Length: 90
Image 1 (cartoon, rainbow, N blue to C red):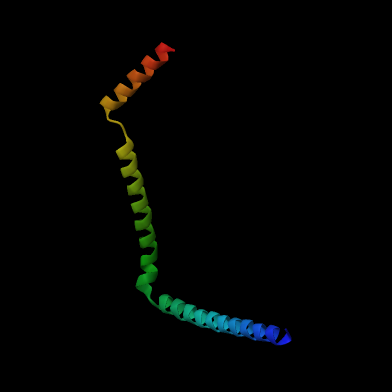
Image 2: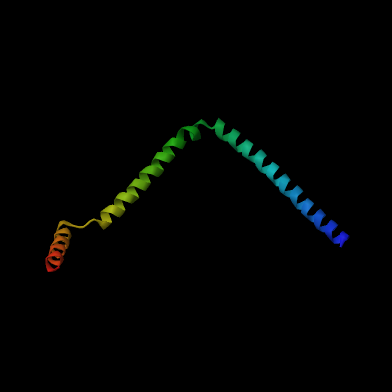
């Protein structure tokens, strides 16, 4: 039983060490990528523009959906006439 627990402990310990190494590697990669990005002035200047494009595309989708769901004047008239008819029947 003691040997089994020791083996399990060693296995878990190795996994933890592996994960810590991976975290360290990812932190170094993150630092390197941030440094690369900070030196790239075009990307820094374009970042707000990409955000504005994203917002514009979202607004466009919203307007297109709204337009698709909007009734024509004839459809709206028909809808109102049906509503008045139903209200009068009650």
